[in-house]
Length: 390
Image (cartoon, rainbow, N blue to C red; front, side):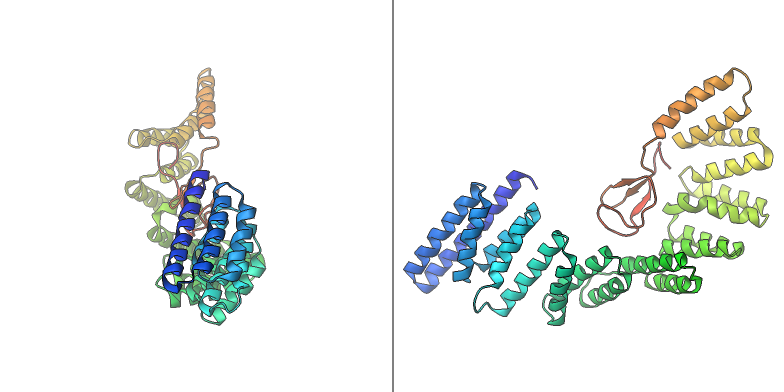
């Protein structure tokens, strides 16, 4: 948050506090009490605007100890400190609110929720978990607390608890959680695969698809398991289901799918399938997969001619790179040097370029991420389409 935005928000918080004090004057008629609060309020606001946060905090804490009328603006001010990254100050201010004598229960629970968020921002997940669990138990701010607990369990990779919290959150709010829940089950399936518990993995994957029938991650994991078991026919069918579920992910599994056809000695079916995909799919991956198969089956000349023809229909730097590689393998004279120079230039152009991008926040990645490392959404990091990518 920029310094300008911070100052503006701080001033708005100060104005809100001033409104409360004016309301106090009108409703209570307690002139002396108002004058004391008024003096402290402007003193704290002056410290705040002069960027003397510690002095401002001390003043507002003393206000919190003597008056509940300033609860709202001080709660907001603490939230502003947290957003600015000054978590210690936010915790200190919010704790002073809870310490008030005879604080109404609805105020107390709001302050607990705020401190829980402070603890999360500070990375004190165990403390935050205790507070949010307490709020859920007393049924105060339940949706917010459950969502925060889901986030905590997700960060701790406690997938079973994440599933429970997400399901409870879904039941008490209008927000659908079927996509993250399906990925939590997939995380458990991955752990089962690492432990060679295939049966457990399959059960988790079935649960993932029950939560989200279009969970392509679950489908691809099922296909991978079947391929390792030698059941290429089932794996092939699952890859076809993955295409129907989300064609955007095709570059991530098209080569694995092609291998199932080759192991089943279904060359003609593979060619037909890839040609059909080339007509439906605008990316270059099916072209490159078919070119590699043509090279193995019919030789470099046919593969190079095929890629050259496709590049006239769809421009692609990756396609050009493959074409140069194919031409290099068939050149035996001085022409090879020419292709080597061109390929080196294309390789440099592609080097460092992200292959995937988050559809939510724009995060670029070279490797597959089922959860975006930036915005933390699930199933949104997909292959990039364009001249230098797909």
